[in-house]
Image 1 (spheres, rainbow, N blue to C red):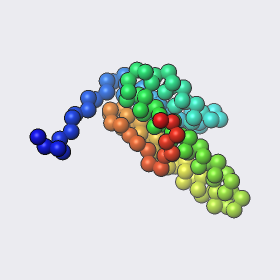
Image 2: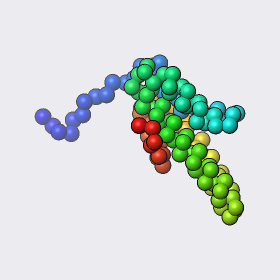
Image 3: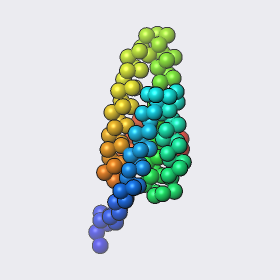
Length: 123
């Protein structure tokens, strides 16, 4: 038997894919509420993590990324004293927006997405 053959991973059901997508897109609550980017994914993940392992995995991934983004934003605010924080804040914001949209789309397609540059605190 060939060692390179992998066991096919079943595609998550439609409901699991949808909730995984909501875990990622819930970060946009940060545009309306302080700390909404953290609370949105946290709440959806906590409520729906037992629905499917895919939702649990993607919820953790979304939460870890939003924690990393929040820490980067705090660092940007600190660096505003030496002016470099302003362009870095724009870069972090655009990067977070693009990566969150990509992650939500991938999750809705049933593909597990791992954010680059994410500090994975929640295991």
